[in-house]
Length: 60
Image (cartoon, rainbow, N blue to C red; front, top):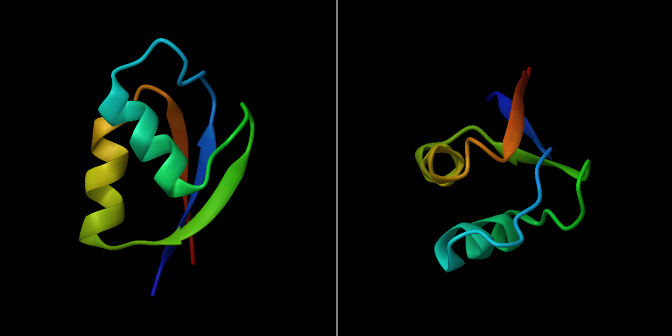
């Protein structure tokens, strides 16, 4: 199964509370922090809401 490397490239400060919550739930704290998550529908849905804040790479 493929995995996604999610990197926070923009600050979540001064964003909608829902977007800040998603960033925190993904485990992203500071700018340039990264996490590896499974490529499933739930993760894709979270990324959809904060796509303007993150970079996503597919890892095999």
